Image: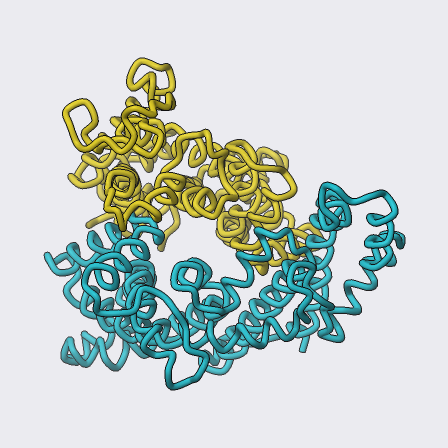
Length: 306
Length: 306
């Protein structure tokens, strides 16, 4: 079974020792060990770190400080050492724009998936733990939000909130918590009557302690995986929204805006914008997808002996 | 029956959410509608015309009446009847989405089954990595890139266009079909692979093997048959995608379907059209979810609908 307590019983059986107080940590340690074994997972982890480093350097203005500066004299310059992807219609270095696009992408991914994770965890935990009226309300809320397609809901929200980076992440975060809430709710239903929760109750743990201290750590693997998935989908949504003219401000560097520019440049043919935006996005999202995949397998208790 | 009645509170939730977004937070639509240079009297007339001078509860009841009678009034932008716009667009949208949707389902179930059959092999790992790679490219890039390569450069398909007759439109639909098919490969294979993999570790599979069934027979007769239950559920829940899933494609290829109408409505702040679309897609979503539940209970005798 997928119960986290199974590992300790197994350990006790094989080693003949009583479970120590660190048994909860050893579950995470197990997952870490399994993750380390996945070469793809480790490599993609370092790729993500590299992206984050570049994003921080760009945000601090240490690399490509002039990426937003128009320079009409150099419009549509061809590929050279100083402009590996050429320049765009305003003479801005495309490589620099793409690098600054990482900052936009990562901040949207980070903020939107944090927001949706918090909403999803709290609502899912409350619904699953308390059941009854609370559950009814949460299910009603997420079914309502879920029944409106995101291509309508997010533009409507950005329409109300206005354009811009912060509004895009609020809109995406407010609309993408449904899966997390649904999964966490299901797990809480399963866990709330397990022995370890009843035991915690018997020694006097209150609701808050049972939810956050006992059950939540046991469903945290869902949170990790959902965070990664949310990160990826937030970046993809931002690209589409910006392309549709509903996303970040046109003055901001964004891969979606670069692809939008490319739409009119392909026939001429200027490939720089499309190539740079696609390449940078591909690297980040693929690394994240592979990382998520390795993480999910490492955290899956069913994969324990594989 | 109870599940059918449950649609009512969800629908109320959807209408409330749409109403709050557009009628309360959306600013003054009459001002927007009249344009920058309208006089105060003109704005007042328009407000009366659109029913915006009435109280909010009255406006909400009017909105609910529109939904119940399927009479959504006229578009602010084109002055057309919205119900006509929707029925007109539906045929174009469905002839784009339906063939690609079902073709990709068949293809992906087959490939996912082979992938699970050879789990752990190069083929299986390769399939997963390719799917993740496919998922790492923005759908915009597929559309732009394939349109450029196959239509603009290759000349194999018309770049865009439309023939309203049922027999003439296939020429224009071929390339969008290919793109939609490719777009669906990544997510579909990964979902089906997970579902089939879940079944492959069940006890009944071990029993089937233990009694000496050939591996191929275990897959064809036991695993696939049981996996079809969750797979059909996934497919039915994804059905509303047939209506909302081709927004970008229609926009790029000039196909006069619902997606194109929607993007135009978003750009024009055409509230009545956006509201109609929101409510209709939410209803479609709910109906197909209900259908999935009913199917589930028919196929799986363990599930009883209360």
